[in-house]
Length: 65
Image (cartoon, rainbow, N blue to C red; front, side, top):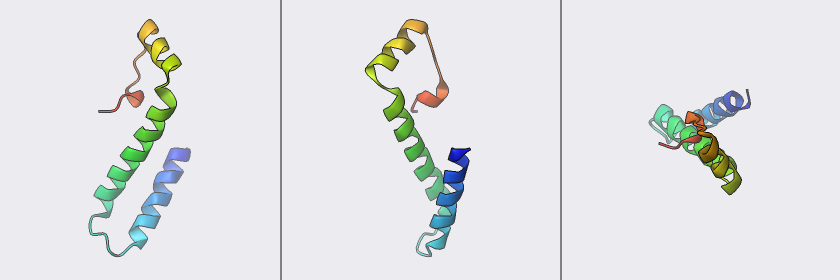
């Protein structure tokens, strides 16, 4: 739920700026970057990495492509 609220807020703020011509592409890139940066920072700890490797745990949300 929080992600959706954040994305909507970001959408509103970016569209208020008149000097940006491609709002949607900018929003997609910003959201992808911030989402993955936070997820990777929280998930890619030494303990978590060992757990994932030992238990063959794969979650596509935790993989940056």
